Image 1 (tube, helix red, strand yellow):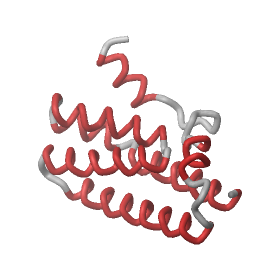
Image 2 (cartoon, one colour):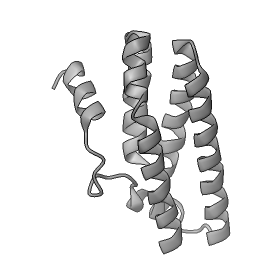
Image 3 (cartoon, helix red, strand yellow):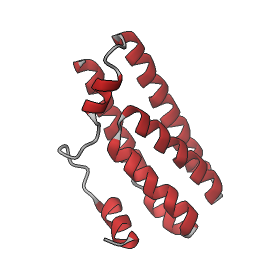
Length: 129
């Protein structure tokens, strides 16, 4: 699969419940020794940062600004095992480096739905753990 096919696949992938939204095994391994309250604090920070970055992306007028915030989303998502969001951010960051502003904006249209689904999955994980 070439870069264009990967971009198309990621941009048009349905938001399915059976897709690996959250790597629960990674989280269980990483968070084994962490108490529930600390987990909630970490998730709260993640969610607040995610909303802040989404707001910054919405008002951004330069690809470098968008790339900066998408890069931050990628790192945060990877850290908490939010696989789908991290994969999306990885592709969006690549587009910021290699594509036109309009092309990047098209990809960014997916961000709110992906973030909301990710947040639901993370909250569910905390509730179940």
